[in-house]
Image (cartoon, one colour):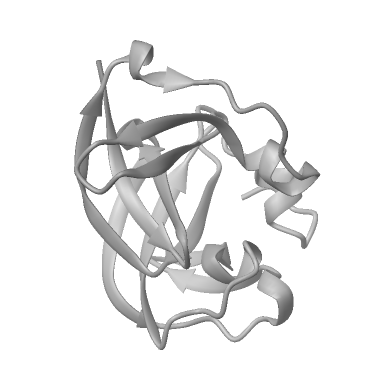
Amino acid sequence: MSQYLCLRCGIYRLLLDIRHVVEIGGSVVAIEAEAGRSMRRRWREGSLPALNLTAFLGHPPAASSQQIVICDEQGRQGIIDVDAVDDLRTLESSQFASIAALSATLQELIDAVAADTDSATCLLRLRHPFAWTSIFTDGEAP
């Protein structure tokens, strides 16, 4: 069993493995980057690449959002802004199914889907490791 944060980004409900979460921030002003491009944001003693994931997925960003600082096994960090963090879910690997066909962008981000019986929707699991190079378009891995 693994634990996941359940996130909302526009029409999407996404799952992010809790092991990759460094910090969840409260409401922040939405990034006004065009077409979901990344930018840098001050965090602690430095700055990290930041991306409004809702805008990146093609939806208008919410007036305010929550920021999540994420990290991979190499210690590279970045910030994603999402419309909201809903809750924490515990799921078994048997609850996930492969996804047949996705756009190239989603294929780099999503690796599986699980049914949410409470809301009768799909939960899309963010790929691990997170697709840093394709998301943070400044070409610099966080």
